[in-house]
Structures are given as structure tokens and as C-alpha cells.
Length: 402
Ligand code: HSE
Image (cartoon, rainbow, N blue to C red; front, top):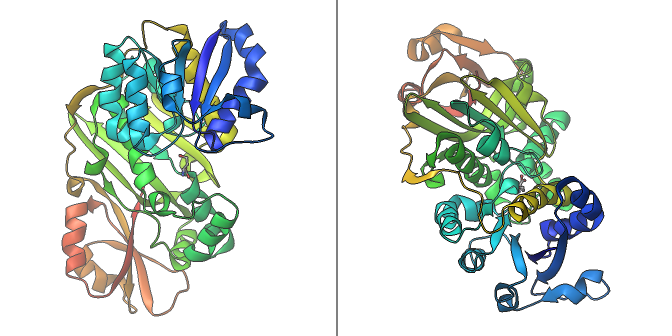
């Protein structure tokens, strides 16, 4: 029997206990792994919940118990999650987590610590919730040279954008609705400013390109400036708006960015709505592949966590090897990346007036008075910024995927 300790009995932690309870026999039959939750660490007590008899408040009980072989860290945040993870690994226990903040900040050192101690540090649930994406990148796509990852990696912002598009509502009212339904945190900053998606694309890019991508190097914009007028323009162009977390590799140059994009209806990412996530991967042999599913939620995320528990249980004493090198992947400046830009500018302008600054443009008529919306030709970010600086009254700009 493999004894497991769960750190944190919140949304994901309670899901982990439920997945192990519900699927214990199936897991045993399929994998030969006999899982038992021995402890749950939480500050709270849960009177009346069968878990109560397993609740401990002192981490030392877990880390000093030689029977515990796998620790599930689903507390979130950097501390004490980092210290608890390090202590478990130093004690030769494997750790798995859904904590993208910890993996993005300290994954490299924790992976090294796991290796030194012949243990594993796995984090399937840190990106895309229940969607298998880390394991495919780590074990299935090893024969490929991955050159692009584009993801809708944040369910909260995808829910908000989908609802703004479906119902023509403004960001603030949809955010409030999302908070009332529990789809958005009371402090939504990490989601709506793109930080959560940024950490996730840093993790995926580190795996795909083989060196540590520092999330603080990734240019990141959130969705707080998207308005119902932007949505009207998107509809007039037969496009939708998605918060995309993107990275690509050409030769040895890696670029990465998180920003809202206009996405054409023909693009499979345009059909990913609500709290769902999707990750598009391109490899030199594989071509295109897309991974789709529930990017958040108790049971879906816990399913991914427990898949890691099982893998760790199968290699106890050896540890799972692989991942990325500790050396930093220097990111190329996004100012050199090329794309089209959708721009709104105050006042009624005809194409020839705009073309004197931007070159060829396509005017978009969304029936909005007092301003002009247009799409530029393909140009670099630097070129766009140079031309935008020569233009009075720019209301907003959204990048166009493609
Ligand atoms: N806040 C995250 C999201 C939760 O909305 O996608 C899952 O990482």
C-alpha cells in the first residue's frame, strides 16, 4: 500500500481525496498501485467529514513518518508550499502538485532536489487542470522538435470573454457575475491580468524547449481593457477574442507572450469557450495537435494530480527523470515578432488618411460612431509601436492571430 499525505483540503485537495476514494479499486486493477490517504494537513478541522480522523495540523507528523511515500502539495502560493515540498523531497518522499506559482518560480530547484534524493516532483495539474499536457510533453512528444505552443490556459478569463461575447456585456459586470458563481477569485488579479496564464506558458515552454523559461521575462497583458465595443468589432470581422499564452522557437530563438488576440472562427482555439482550456502544440514531425478539456475545477484537476501520484508510486526509490536544464532560456524581444494589429482610433477617417501612417489597412465597420477601426498589414511589434506613436487618439489595439 502506498501511503499518501495531502497538504491542503481546499478545492483540489478535497478532489484528490474523492478521486482516490472513488477510483481506488479501478486504479489498483489498472496500475497495481494501492493508494491510501494517511494524512490531510490543514489549519482547519472538518467535524462531521470522514476526513477529520486524518487531519493533522503539524507538518512534522507527515515529513517524519517513514510510511508516507507521496506528498500531494495542493496548498497554492510560494510559502510554506516551497519549504514543505523541499523537506519532503529531502526525506526521499515524492511530491506532486497543482501549484503553478511554485513550479514556475521554483520548479527548477525542486526538480534538482527530487533527483538528488531519488524521488519525483510532478506537476501535471499545474497547467490545463485535468488536461493531460505535461506528461505528453515530457514523455510522448520526445521524438519531436516542438516549435510552437499556444494555449487558452486560464478558465476564468475564457469564461469572462465568452460571456462578454455571447451577451454583449462589459468586463466589470461579467467579472462580478463570475465571482458570484465562484469562477473568479475575490482578488481576480492573477487571472485577469494574465499572470496565471504567464506562469503556465513558462512551465510548458521550459518543458518543450528544454531550458528554464523565466516567467518574469514574458511580456504579459490581461483582458481588463477589452470592452463591448471591441467585441462588436470582433463580430464584424467574424472573429472572437481569446487570451492566448503563446511561445515559439525558430532556430534557437524563443519568444513568448500573453495577450488578448482576435482569433478567426476557422481557428480551433476559437471554439474553446467558457471555463474550458486548450493547448495547441506544433512539432516538426507531429504537425498540429490540440489538447482540450476542463482547465480547472476540483475533480478534473484532482484527476491529473492523482495520475502523478500513481506514476510516482510506480517508481519509488528511483524517481521520474527528465524535464528541463537549469540554465535560463533567453527570450528574444517580442518587438521583432510580426503580426497584424486591429486598431481603434477616435474620429472618422478614410483608409487613405490611415495608410499614410500605417501602410495598407482594412477598415472595419461595426456601426460604432465617432471612431474608426482598422486592421493593419503584417508588421513587427516595434514597427507598430513606431507608427502608433505618430497617431493621435488611439483608443485600443488588439493583436490578430494568424
Ligand atoms: N484560476 C485558474 C483558472 C485556475 O482560471 O484557470 C486553474 O489554474
